[in-house]
Length: 246
Image (cartoon, rainbow, N blue to C red; front, side, top):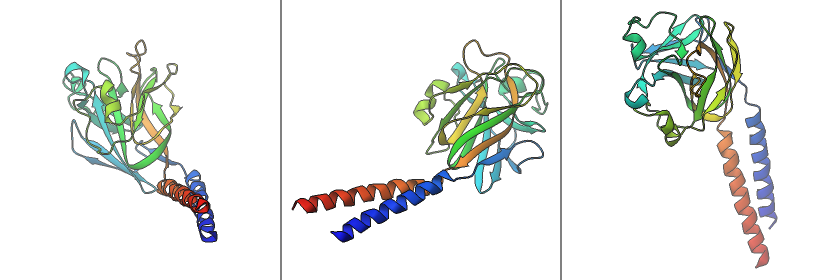
């Protein structure tokens, strides 16, 4: 009986210790400007990606746009400028900016809607994002946080299908037109974040920005261990109670 009691106490103490370690996870900021985090490009043109790593956190960034049939998502080109990440979709690239290298290419909702997808190799808590327009524009955002078991691409999907892929509900933030950078608080835990200029009816057509940085907090593995130990402690406690009735 005493052994069971001490086991329960030990497991609960371990769970509490691990949970304290989880709460102390330090924030990590990815700087996407030219003077920021080291980035490694993979591929060229539509469907390319840029990989970053900060403090052991690995991140892959891709771009999409609703240029497909029925406003489904198609791959776009993610590009890195001095003020951060922008996007060039297939309709923009086919008109007058074929190289997609001009700084006017931003994450925008003018005509087609652009989206930037951030994919981590592990769970993180999304804290904030900074956007910086090239010119004076609105900086209204729509974003989705999710957990995807298979980090495949989103080509052929619509925004209405994001929930079936593992994304949570859309979240929206609004601001006034400006040429200044804007830091927006984020919420949610997952391994993917998709950010775009606002998709809310009545708030589209004049939102444009580059993405300067993203701040997240790692969710350490002890989070899973905490739940495991708590479950074991509960089972041992129930067994001890059952034995006491015999």
